[in-house]
Amino acid sequence: MAGCLYVVATPIGHLRDLSRRAEDVLSSVAIVAAEDTRRTSVLLAEIGASPQQLIALHTHNERRQSERVLGNLTDGQDVALVSDAGTPCISDPGFELVRLAHESGIRVVPVPGASAVSTLLSAAPLPVTSYRFVGFLASKGSARNKGFKAMLNDSSATVFFEAPHRMEDALRRIGSFDAARELVVGRELTKVHEEILLGAADELSDSLKERGALRGEFVCLLSGMELARGGDLELAERILKEIGSELPPSKAARIAARISGVDRSLLYERLQQSSA
Image 1 (spheres, rainbow, N blue to C red):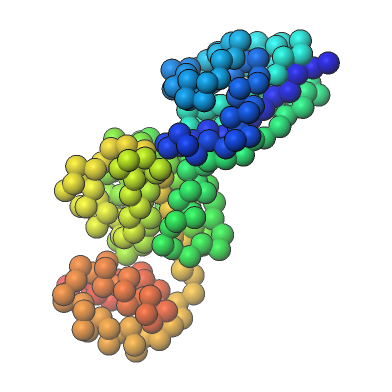
Image 2 (image 1 turned 30 degrees about the vertical axis):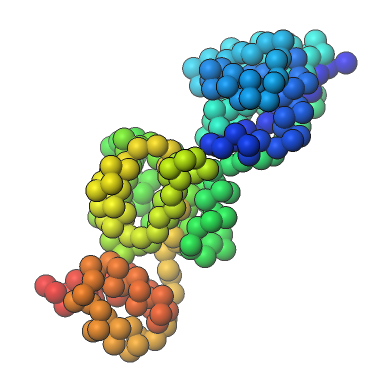
């Protein structure tokens, strides 16, 4: 009888976020296939698990190792697939193994748990009725600009990951396309220095730079484009008259938009024109 492939979600930071079911699985399987064996070793030691084999299955060896692990499954050994943190196969390696297992008639069992995406969405101070997840965007060039433009032109909110050394660039690009657009930045979620920040791109960039906080793990939620330009424009203009000279244009536009229901970008454009 073939073994079972368990796709196991592991903590994104705080080790006590590991579910009891995940702990049971990791303590019982013969093999753990991990994106980074060093990080997984720490987790296994924490729960006292000692599989027969701990093998590396990452981006650079995924195809070869997936074939190897498939052989173990075919021979009747149960395998747990884990990534560095969070749920495997979501911007992490593991898809090849999952695909091969399904094609070979091997049972694939998800063991749900932590995910940076759902963690940020659950605590984000933005209303989200629909969203899309794009993972990591291109690292440079026109493909990177194209990715940001697509997010900004989408009526749904967008969740994306960003590397710390590209975070400042990401905020700069978003701000250059739409200085009034709100986004939520989650940094080091569930870890000691966890923070969740809301604001326009330039405000967030300034805050992170001033505090030396452009490091760690980032997951971001970009609000969707407001297609309807309704709301109470007269009220919005009165608000802008009161606060427009006291606050940065992006912040003033955001506050007025929340109260009046008028599109942020429209109000930001009006502020820019009035100050020209």
